[in-house]
Length: 376
Image (tube, rainbow, N blue to C red; front, side):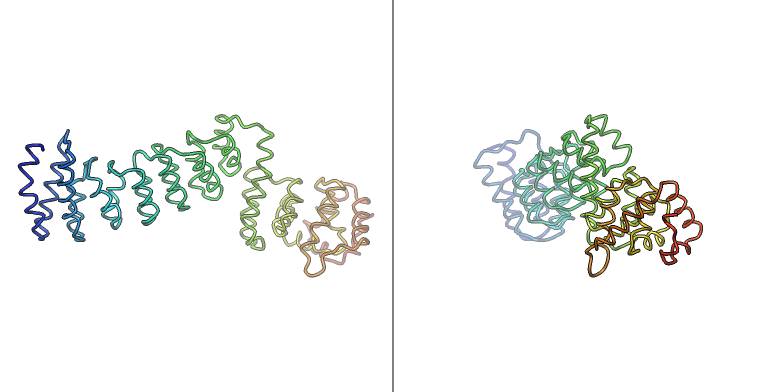
């Protein structure tokens, strides 16, 4: 037994048996002095005695005493594990600093805290200088955006392939995760490609340079990303405000194209289809709504012809767009035949002239379709 510990033990046990708060604070100070001494090494018997003192110390639930314990060991990386774990499970005001700085807590201890304590406790652990893969996995599994962001931004955290995949997937709909994840050293080409279209233009350039993503992969990723985006907003597909935001998102990525129209319709996003069609044709949404709702399909044929959609593309769009009609959605063969006849009669210049006339005089469009000489 070290002479220093041997000399202090009687006084320490006397303090342990004194149940006053001041005595326990004094005991905490003596234990802190013991563990703060560089090179302190205890024999098995000494550890038993010290643990007995710690047990006596931790009997109390006094917030003042527990705060004093944290203060006494404020800069100690070798706080006794039993003390550290006890305080780590206290309220976050007491546990925060212990969880962020104490190095005697094992990975298993930290995982137990993540799984049994609050999100604030998990956030504190996510700010540690070093985080092992297993602990990072536990943090990511909480699914909390704050915790995930702290882990993603912490370069002292070691991320497993599983953690990278979960964080990259979450980053699609969590903006704060996108840049830190794209810059993580563990980021894979597959994860970066999947996240590519969700990030800003600057980060897309960075990803191209760092990961060498091929153009074919980028095009395929765009189609997948659009599917994911529309699926995410499936419950909001009738909300014009949200659908305009989705359209803005597509515009920012130069993803508004003729090819996207059938894709949008197949996913049942009829409002977004009208919004995108309006942007492609430079038509007010009210006019587009009237055009798409028109039973004969001749007005839709004119719009499609004017913006360069070919005949097979028009057939696909016409049939899919009928899904927006209430009640019976089956297209009668005669309706399709009339729409195709209108499409065949129209030249591109004539269709563009019609669009221009509708823009200048919307009332012309809203008259009965028989008033339109589409074949003229």
